[in-house]
Length: 352
Ligand code: HEC
Ligand SMILES: [Cu+2]
Image (cartoon, rainbow, N blue to C red):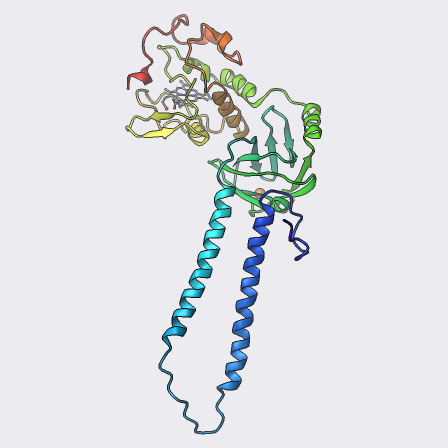
């Protein structure tokens, strides 16, 4: 349903949310006009009708009117409830992750937008998307608060340092659309703009194929996992100082204070950047912080790697063939423990 012909100032409706968002907006505008007009007219009518008609005139006392008072309390109350319920419904739909979606990671940084596609294609101040497919954005910032705003999609989400925010939409039209930063973020805020290009699925596939990529996010993460030495503590051997990370993603973790948290993106990010904030039960505070050593994009890659091994049983690194991305072997010589061997005892985490 398109109502854009009614109010020509709105941007093109290019996502699944756009028409309802616009309808809601028009509803609010019409409501505002109706009340403003009614109040304006009443002011004039009353001013004329109840003006003082002769000097010394004493107006009659008005003692109140129950029916009138109930009406002007209950009717606006019902109207505001409609605004609330409708607004909440739209909000709930927009911020509930769809089951199946194309997942894209976005990082904001003074003053540019970077995006990473699941297979590792990256772009700056641009976003290429297929039409008719649900897209979920997971976003974070390297510095200050930004906001990812695509007016054509009626989609605007804050991008906050230190946490992940998500939003989703389904582009319904091919074409190019504006991308803005909608949160004042410094001198060149107004230049933090780009284009969103929505293409037919086949064209999108061709774009993916023609865009250079070094590695998928998970592959890049696996490289970092070895390069940064995570592997020295996280290979799943009993002697290892850190917990095994296979099967961790999306599962509840018991912390040393007894509480439980789900290992989602935010938890994993914090585990890497501020490991002591939530310490896994049964382990010492030996993990160094990687704050300042990895960019947000690299954190995303590490998380993608940890996600990629989510469905795997923890295995001693003696069978690296079972890992999709072989990372375990090259660093084996660096292990502090004796020669890597299959685990023979229960993992420390399991003893809790
Ligand atoms: C010196 C050893 C060491 C290194 C190096 C290390 N970690 Fe850890 N890591 C630990 C220990 C010990 C824990 C458990 C205690 C805690 O939560 O801080 C842990 C916990 C974690 C957790 C939470 C796991 C869970 O089961 O909930 C994640 C995720 C993690 N590390 C990722 C990494 C990544 C990614 C790297 C490399 C960038 C890394 N670690 C480097 C020792 C290490
Ligand atoms: Cu910005």
